[in-house]
Image 1 (cartoon, rainbow, N blue to C red):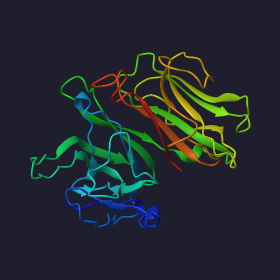
Image 2: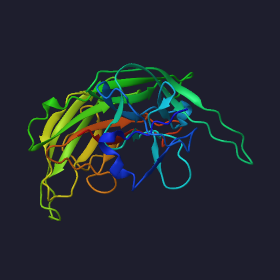
Image 3: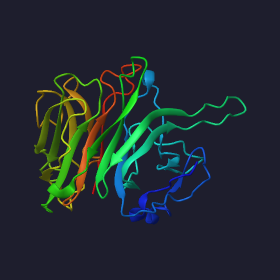
Image 4: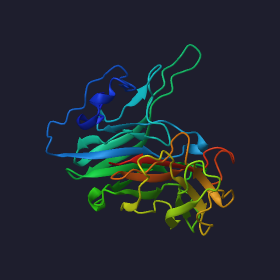
Length: 305
């Protein structure tokens, strides 16, 4: 099986000195993915947002036909695939052949050890990837309810249209909800900016954007302009996923009104910069599965441009 090691000609070569990319199945095959018809290529980000059956999550590799189009970075050992809640590629886009192409998401086999038998590969999704040449897309792997058998998987693909991002003094965002047991009233999502001077005794905030009543596979694929963070300010924007109708601009909001929270500092902080374009997405399972503390809703984000 040919490995498509493709963080894209547009972007990847500078990364190779930092991260080693590999594939599973043909773990040592580093043959680059080559699109011979460069006039007919599309650009895709693949986001693994499917909670596994009974809450047992899995990794996936992405294929077009028999060609692998994903890879993961490793520092120790060999990679298995893209884990739940993450995306490939992490930077820029994967370049794929446009049109209607055979497409699959596969959990790779795990080789036998001295004490455990081999775990065979599993086809999680088999279908088509449909794109148009020159365009950009985000492709979410999603599943049916993980606590109801059998669990099936599909994809939810949206257009990444950057043409609306015309004001270079603004940052642009959108919100996509891929929590499949979202309440019928949906969730609210708020971006809270701290406007007071860092370290001030009194913290002053404002909610710069609020999405309301966003249901499963809801949100808006269109990017919306928001205030960009000052280039000298390293503080992020707090992002809250809330029960629909909850109080806005309340950084101290707590459960049950607060469903998930991304703080304005620490690991994975979201700092919107002028001229950049971002997607905010939420994954997980409301109430948790298999228990009330596992696979709870969480907030992720990635840079589109």
